[in-house]
Length: 296
Image (cartoon, one colour):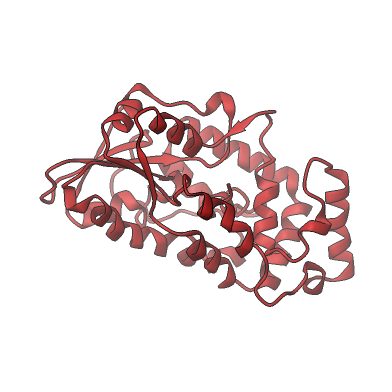
């Protein structure tokens, strides 16, 4: 299922050099798995960085993560992925709110380039089914097909299947309605222009997507942070909306969901949310929590 995390695989620009970000004062250890403790918590909780689309061969769980899944009270993703109403309900939020069509937002020549791309990629949904959808939603559908492998998995799916062995409940930090509302805060015309740019530069974006997957395999959160903010100038102005404001919200939500340490919870969210000065790890540390890297 599409989530906002899918957005960042196409938000990286092919035309700009990576920008230096304000990272935390020490380098981030290379692991996706972190223990949250301290600040009065009786029981630790855990933070794991996911990638929403991976080649099936790369979507594996470490023994450490399996033990944490088994021992946690429940698992919390960005969205409650075990809730059919939530997962199936995303489609009702996919349409532009003012009933516009994609062709209304572009020149005839730009729209023709999108039509050409879809006509040449028969494995995708036909463009005729997507013309009223928010352009960033269309971009995300394309991004999920850029991996060079026949079978793909999400880490969320793998974690959820492992949790089912122990009858673990699944919860979500955010709702589909909230995530969809973020797309409505970015002008549809800008989204449409970005979609054209994305398709025009698809080969370069594919290389960046494969690089992101390689960085994820290496569990290099610090490099992932720099890749995510390597966005085109137009996207940079929306990073607070798409990423940083949500990280701030989560730094409040995570302790609340874990009942201030009275229960142990596994939080599995997009790895791009974890590192950097404005990442969840650093924000939780600023609140007095201890974030300990675990072998993974």
